[in-house]
Image (cartoon, one colour):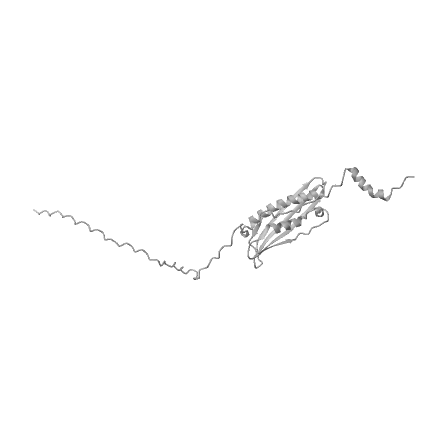
Length: 233
């Protein structure tokens, strides 16, 4: 008869198998959050910046968002908060996440990110708009889905930071505040009616030097004597 293994032997079996395999199991891979605070700020002439998400993520195939250790939509929202800053006294800017999809078709994973930036005046009139879209594919067999999606998301976010800044400087350059620039001084308007002559600048009270006296020109010399008339014969 075969001896039945004891309960202690059953509990120790996984440890013995791990030791025979060559040591402890490898720790789970960690993925650092994507940070954009080191990039130059885009200073907008508005009183506040709002970040909204209009994209609705899906975990239904062909979407593979649920396997990405870093949420693409979350990375885009963080980019908007860290790069867009309000440096004005009126109006608002609305940064929207419009697309943050990752889909897989066979050995091809396609990512598409799209964001928008709208400028509104104090009376809620839209005064400007910019949009940035990037797309990228990963082609080939997937051996580590989490690592592959993380690398794809990081590459696309680097691309998006460049594209977003380009589109803002191209379409919203009038709403950008230069680093270190101060507010322009208020110009006083003239009180006169339009078309009225402008008042003369007040004259200085300091004594003005007298104009030099005019010296009369020296008299011309006496005219030379005329020749004596010739008597008529």
